[in-house]
Image (cartoon, rainbow, N blue to C red):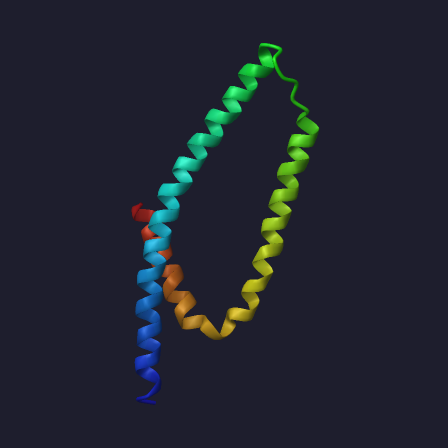
Length: 102
């Protein structure tokens, strides 16, 4: 029992600190990405209203749907990390704290 406790404490500490850093950074980066995407879409709509380009909205929404479908498939590999549950739990807690404070 005494040999297992330091390993679990280490996993919880590293996971929590790592999760906080990643969550904080992701929130900052996601804000920047959302602003850039908004500016890009606004620019495309402007070009579309001026007649410079023609936007195929059906294909645009189809591409976005494919992208989101790929993201959901990528999440299935997480199942193999069940053995890292203490690390993942503390990482998630740190991530959410960092994301909230970011």
